[in-house]
Image (cartoon, rainbow, N blue to C red):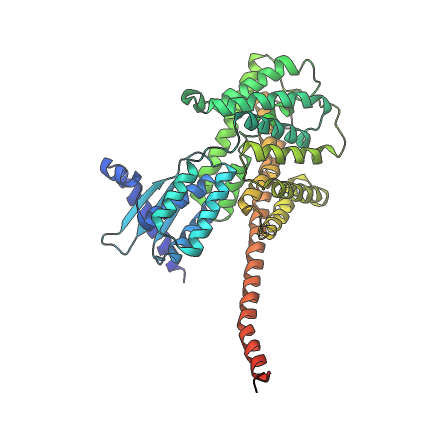
Length: 460
């Protein structure tokens, strides 16, 4: 019983090494990177699109295995990494392995919704693989729904909303608005400049820190780091770190470790940018905090986060209400968890509640795919800003930074466990519902036949 899984893992590792060796050959590399028709090409295109939708590698692998089974090729071996997908066909002599890179930019929410629809249709109807590949290529090349002005406005609202949730200080609101416009403009146009795109997190963090130090701090008596963090929300790798924790707890060691290193490196780049900004203005991160607004402020922040997220990430039409629903459920559950278990474990309760709640309403006509609602909820649950503040405080020598970093790591693990438990509950409930429906459908014909047999014929 224990040798079969070990042999399967060994076969996958051998196949991965064989494919990576083939990448050293120029002709093999060109052949691997060329889009392939047929089912392997479909699996590679779907896998790359799902990874660009910030899906965990274990979920992507399960989806690809199910697609291969639905298309009548369950023997295909699938190996998924965050930037690479390997598809091996052991029925050929010798076994052929197709390599598909997954290094594209993260997809917007409208693209995520379209990819989810394509995958669901492929699972249900099994259209020709080449048609599915063409549809995915069309979706990934689609332009954003909103223009530059609304995109920057969305980032401004997103910054204001997160500011009200993280640090609802009245004097800080104008700073959030200005920094939201600045960072939104940098994100929109800076990524189009190849040289600047390489150092965009460092450049952005440096710019906003200098602006806060030179302009805002003389006018606003507040913690400089808490003023900077909400404006950098689009750079914070909280979601990446949480997905890494999910992959590690699911046994995906290579994927989880590489994603974890990437997330920490991105936090390090942001930290370096802030530290460089503080060095230039010859200042330090103050520990004071401005006068806080009432308990209503975070709830207003949720409304701004939802609207800003809808515009900045170009969400599908009609999804704003559902995004707000996911945000409210996640924040309410997290607040309840904070009262019951403390701040470090509040994310566990939030994720445990929001995942089944989202999958439940996803069955409603007109609701967007669960991935769109869950992504927005994870952005709210993930304490990426807290980890960023902790690293920056450590770099600037602020007391208590180590405790903040450790609390962030604990929160990430708690959210990951909550996601796994919530997803498991949703799958179990779905399986029970399908079993009940199947049982009802089996008894329905018998009841109809019995009624038909006992009903006298009206012509008699």
